[in-house]
Image 1 (spheres, rainbow, N blue to C red):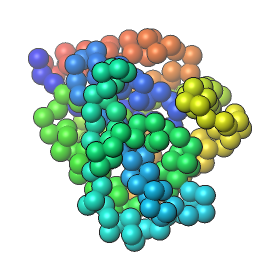
Image 2 (cartoon, one colour):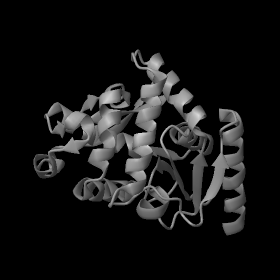
Image 3 (tube, rainbow, N blue to C red):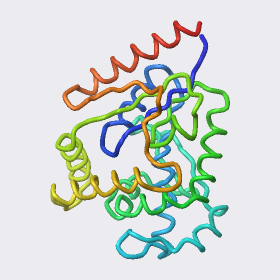
Image 4 (cartoon, rainbow, N blue to C red):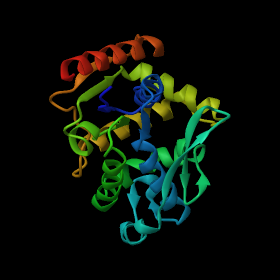
Length: 233
C-alpha cells in the first residue's frame, strides 16, 4: 500500500504528540517528535548556561557555533512502548518535559540557524515517506507537500488541565496558573517569531479535540488517512 507523509500541527498541549504517536502505531508508520528535537537543543543550551533571563533570552553565538556537536536520536523504550529522545547518547526524555525546558524552548526555537539545522534533519527522516510528524511548522515549512495535514486545536482550559496533569505525574511542583501562563506565553512566541511561525496550513484539516477522547481523536484521524489514501490510489 502507498505510504504518505502526515503532518500534524497546532498549539502547545493540544494533544498533537499523543495523536501522532497513536496514529503512527496504528498505521505502522515512523513517528517523529519534532518538538522533542527543539527541546533537546534547549536542554543542551541550559546545560551550557546559554539560557538567560529565566528562559526569555539565549546566548545565541555559542549555541550556533556548537550546533554540529548536538546529536539527537530516538530509541525505542521496551518498558514504555514508546521512543525516547537521546541527546549525544544520553536519554533525556524526562528532562525535556520539565518546566525549565518549557520556559526556554520558544526562545531557542526562534533562532534561524537552529531551525535550519533541525528542518534539514527532519526532511531527511521523511525522504521515504511513511511517517507521522507533529510540531508547529510541519505542514507549512518542513513538509509543505505532505499528503495529509492536520491542525489540532483545543480550548485553553482543556490544554492547561492536560499539561498540568502531565507535569504533576512527572513529579513537578507547579500551580495551574503557572502552567496556563507558560502555555499562553508559548502561544504568543510561537505565533509571532520571525522564523517559521506557528501557522495553520491553508490545506490543513481541523480537528478540535476539546471534548473528544484520545480514542475518538484517533478514530477521526484514521478516517481522514483512509480517505486520503483512497483518493490517491
